[in-house]
Length: 604
Ligand code: G6P
Image (cartoon, rainbow, N blue to C red):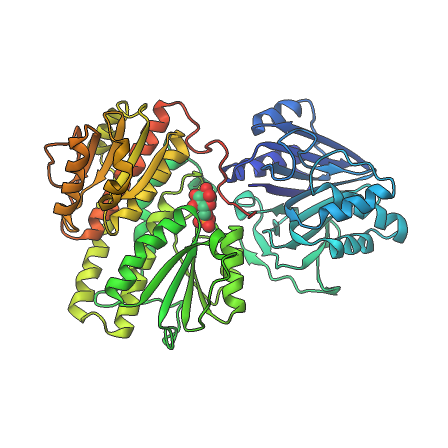
């Protein structure tokens, strides 16, 4: 998804911008560009593909003195990923970068074209720069022209604009897409569409709200407006360090993030799983009053974690729970009952469909709760309550530690509700807490396991497809295992309920059909076993993941946790993550930035 950076100061502007864009690479992009304004001259460079192409193009450009610049990584939505469609977009004397979608761009474009404006690109963004210049010509005041431009835009946007008619300022506006502005001790000014771009640069930041706009300059600092009125700057210290956001000795961010799960899960449970009870300081004691059902809504991996935890909510907290894919939910005209707690799950907190579903629920008067990894994200800001997952920055596009921490938070939440509703005894809750505390151990990757999966992976590079199968909680885990594999290996993989294979998919079974069987000891072992036997009888190639040796399997990964279904769940999760990783490595794919995918999908 697109990324934005901006800078005013006397450091090497090109370096600052490209460096910031590099921190946003994990979001996914297919072209990049920068524009630098110095001594009333704007220089702009764009390149299709990775940032190294942009660096190559700018290698003889060394803007060392004071100045300002804007930069962008683009993930194509309107128009192909070409250099012309890459940002910054230029008019006669101004440059703009934009994230989001201008929904009324076609009518604005038609109006401008009718007045003789020539468009170079196929993007929605280009209307912004032309609208600005048109307004400037009419009003002769850049601030008023910017305000008039923003007022005409419908849809989601985070915008930075530089113009030669006001060469000291960067103008900005935010609505629906994230944007952060910050400064350091020298009063250099930085912009970013995510704080990853500002870590190590800005010391304090402002997370802009929808409808905020304004301008910044070295002399004036940051001027923030909302509905035409100046707004006080709500600056926050920018925490986090860059090193922890780097690869730390691993080949890939995804690999590092798989290994990190043990540590981050300790953070996730800290101060929440006490000896005999679950505590969430973020929730009011009366948080659950009047609630008689839960609807969970999310996309992708976050949806799979919701699906898994619905089993826990019903089983432990005895509360009716349904799980919805956000992009479907938005348009199905759902019946929303104010007695339902609406839970959204999102790693980024910016996924457009999840955000819009959340707004629908809020507008219908439902109590809302976000399970999210990014504080101050759009989803967090509009939810009534938030439980942060505390996974830290996740850079691999294929989500791993975010999934693990989401499941953990919701497992604790189901116990929290069970406490409140008294559907479990104190002893039962204490036993669950013991199991929770064991999970960081269960997800530790040992060298033997990783080596085994690495060796196994070479036998799974061909075939006509994978089925990951499991029952109960292990069915959503099968879905997630299959999603991981297809995201980074580009091989066809499906997750399926083990008991449902005979109703169709078994027709595909032959030696070239790979079945990854999740066979936990604690949940329906015998039933899954007979489902796998049915596949084995049809000569399917079977990789069994289980604490019990299964003689009919072609390959076998021995898991060790058998004390609790959830420790089996987490241990098997790691095996499926490593399997996807190693297959992808053998196929020579870009593990961290798989083709066609984006880390944060801020368009519907
Ligand atoms: C994208 C990512 C997935 C993620 C999904 C939902 O598709 O590539 O990894 O699961 O969005 O994202 P969210 O940030 O809302 O969890």
